[in-house]
Amino acid sequence: MIDFLIIGGGIAGVSAAARLSALGSVTVLEREDALAYHASGRSAALYEAHYGKPATIALNKAGLDFHRAADVLSPRGLLLVGSAGEADLFAADVAAMHMKLITLDEALALIPVLDPTHVDRAAYDPDAWDIDTDKLIQTFAKMARSNGAQIVTKAEVTGITRSGSGWAVSTKAGDYTARHLVNAAGAWADVIAEMAGVAPLGFQPLRRSMARIPAPDGHDLRDWPMVFGAGEGWYAKPDAGALIVSPAEEDPTEPHDAYADDMVLAEGLARYEANVTTPVTRLLASWAGLRTFAPDRNLVLGPDPAHPGFIWCAGQGGYGMQSSPGASQLLADLVGGNVPNIAADLVAALRPDRFR
Image (tube, rainbow, N blue to C red; front, side, top):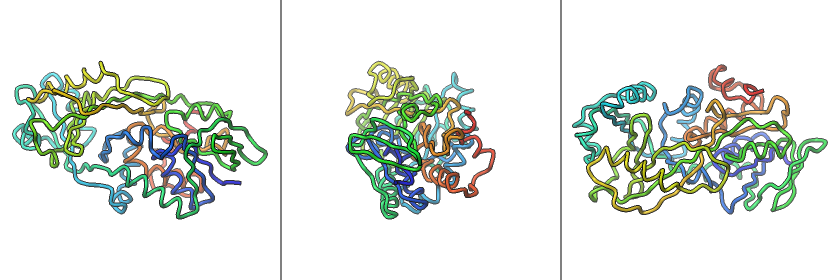
């Protein structure tokens, strides 16, 4: 019998496998052909320590040393821009993310296509890094496999029942029995809970669309920072010689293989264009991902108080990549009975007990 059967092979499930494999036998079930197909494979991939709610920020900070040791970070920086009509949103973002105000000339030196007739304020944080998401996934997978963990793809779960000593799980790749079931199913987390006879927590998948456009005016984008509009009304990030632009929408949807909404994408590109001097003339590609949140927008980590053999590892929202080292270590600490390395009140804000 497997000690920990993990449903979901995104960043949540694979990082959980790496940590839990030090405590017992682990098998990861991924419904797709490869790991990190859904939200994890469509991440904007930025480490910004102060991005998120206080409990998420604690996880971000707790995982920084792991990110550095895994050599998955590279310098990027984060620029925030706003206009006179966005003063309150801009000020709130500066305070929340501990950013430093800079002059418009300094902002233009960072991103020369900003439109100074619209943008009239800016702030900057040099301590933001790109995350090599594939390398991070593979680092966790290697850790898990080195401890004997098995990772099974094309293993969509079709049924879950309680057995006398744990759980019996049927999949398209075969049947499994386990002492503990770890729900790392992302947008499908409540679906898996209901299959297991565990009360759902009210997770909501939110669609976020992306467009990849050519480098504005042919600029070399390698040293450009990521840029947010005030209130995260849009953002743009260099990507392999091109620019990713997102309307940063949060449209509620059902769990599915997400795709971009053309109208929402057009509206977001218009918000981006209002802040720059170079219009968008064509798209290289577009896609969407689902950012799934619990009702309070904190992650949910740990055993369900009503069903201790059912372990939640869900609700990563848009913070899964940067929070994964800290979140997976906290999960292992809670399961293994160890004292977490973050404050008790923040741990309480992450446990599923808060919903029961």
